[in-house]
Image (cartoon, rainbow, N blue to C red; front, side):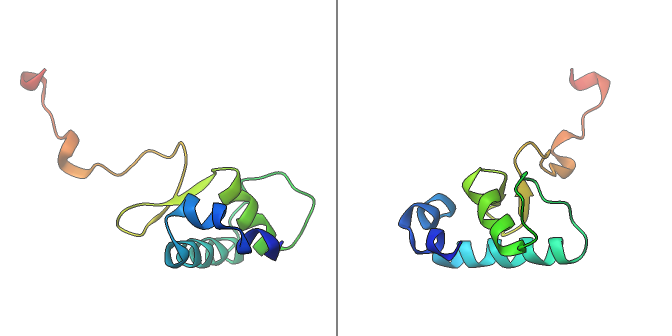
Length: 87
């Protein structure tokens, strides 16, 4: 499990060691609070689950440092505030 963390591929995938540690920490908090794993692996080791989620492109950090899952709709706020006259 920790062997994957020694590889540069996972560091480059997330954009650096700081982002990797931030992503791992935020996802571990979610899992510890009852979040469901996004990968199907036979382990109770939450760190292994997080690493596999990263390697399988299930989670990422936004430019603002928020943890998101791929396929999750981004919060666009007022950017989509249109009325029928705009269409």
